[in-house]
Length: 250
Length: 321
Image 1 (cartoon, rainbow over the protein chains, first blue to last red):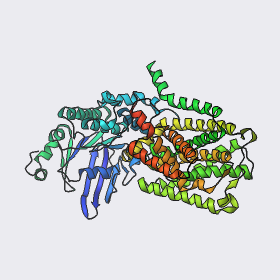
Image 2 (cartoon, rainbow over the protein chains, first blue to last red; image 1 turned 60 degrees about the horizontal axis):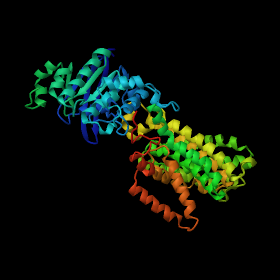
Image 3 (cartoon, chains in turn green, brown; image 1 turned 90 degrees about the vertical axis):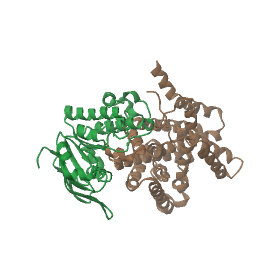
Image 4 (tube, rainbow over the protein chains, first blue to last red; image 1 turned 120 degrees about the vertical axis):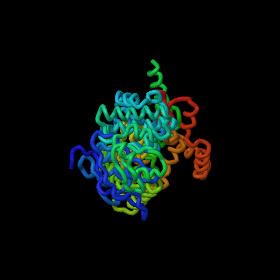
């Protein structure tokens, strides 16, 4: 397999009982790319993410990360080797403070969670503050995460994923619930991370301006089938892609 | 200066309790010294249980099994092999920990009500083994003649011994709850799914915690035998597993000292009420109902929410950092 390919799926399929949600998806993502998967609701975008990150068991086909097969691995193992995700509905620790949320993920990445006798308060201070700063959450570090606004929860969601120092980051609708200003800030951060540390990013999104503004590669899912792929310009011209968005201008 | 002040505020409650615990036996009759001793031992038991309940968010209804294993280990070693007490205590922690490792291996595969049911079933298993194995455990006769060394024979002496062991145990537990491991438990409680996605093997951490909790339950059990001069199988029964649940809920499962405070309320009431009526379970039931209905966060939960002081907290109400 080509070293440049960070994620590859081979005939990836998923069915829930008799419902086929994803059919024979052959997907490739190059290292260092920002790519998006688009498609109408129910197209199978989240299912694709769920299969790749071990959230759901794969029904057929294989998943490869950096050339290594990871099909049906345990979730924590996939996270440990550098493939992490942020969820569509923010999935945080509501009763811990924002600071403690981020610190937890950093300590897990540093493999320090089996430390029984050093107060957690003393550990990973700089890293935690740094990441809060990067994601624009410094002002809320002592706020209980459960009472953050939707947009800030999504930022925290992103921070938790980033704390794991991934090679590939999967973002499921990263800007849902954010104001247009926050959306812009968040996507700029994603772009900066991609540029500065070469982080590969795969995201799903409904916001057309985000999709065409930030993705270098687009893939269109429709009813569980990959129907079109290419640069944003190519996909814009693609008849099948247009048909999926029936009447919608993309 | 402000930091020092906060630190003082944070540790004021345990310090005050410790000083009271030091002075009380000197001024009360012997009967109450026994009651206070019971408070300490059961308080440690409840605090160990709370690692699973308040911190990890799972209800174990079988911690008495590990308490009982600890009690019987010390009992058997002292009666049959005449081991010195101070050696029996760590050894009891080890045997209880091994028991928790074997049974916990299966329990941590489950969550919620299924976890609770399986811990209870295993608790009953341990109870029946001890209950039936006459040649080794004495069966339903229990074990008698577990005498502490002479210098600990007096009520006050054994009380101060318990106070020392329980204090060391509580300090260790406190450090564990404030460590990255402790925060990982809270993370599992708050959001098990997310914890897996930050790369943590949740089942493994749950098992480690189950073993730690079992070890400290075993330590509490080990203190019980020489205190009571005997052990009986019902130390392992499911009713006895219910005591730490009651205590944690009464005192406040989301505060480190909650279970200990719960033990004070529960044990004190028990001793007080049984002095003039045999209907103690009726009274404890009524108290329990009142606590659950009127102060769902337990006693410390109520006091804390009014902002009086800041007991070591588990993560529901925040200190200023």
